[in-house]
Image 1: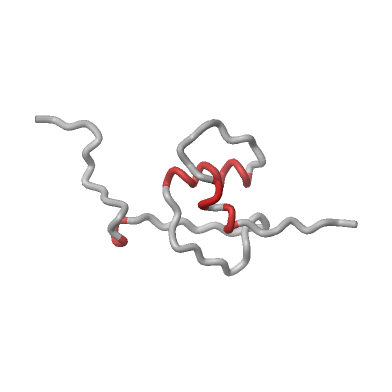
Image 2: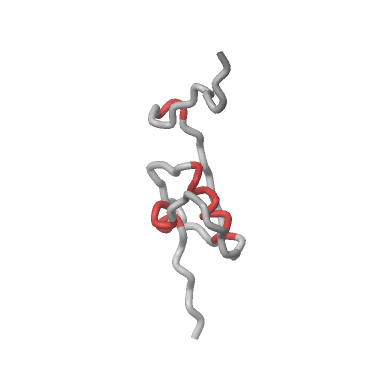
Length: 74
């Protein structure tokens, strides 16, 4: 029997999670985040690239805390 989409990956297990590193002016310096869901990575790329994300399963609130505040110039 062949089951599609069965890959054995269990994201609830800490040793099966991926690592995501981000560095640059868009991100807070020295900030550590407890974990990012793969569906939320799209939100990060859309923000950094300054594009409007298409409808997706990610949640902006899950990654909003990663970003540095923009400095205002008077």
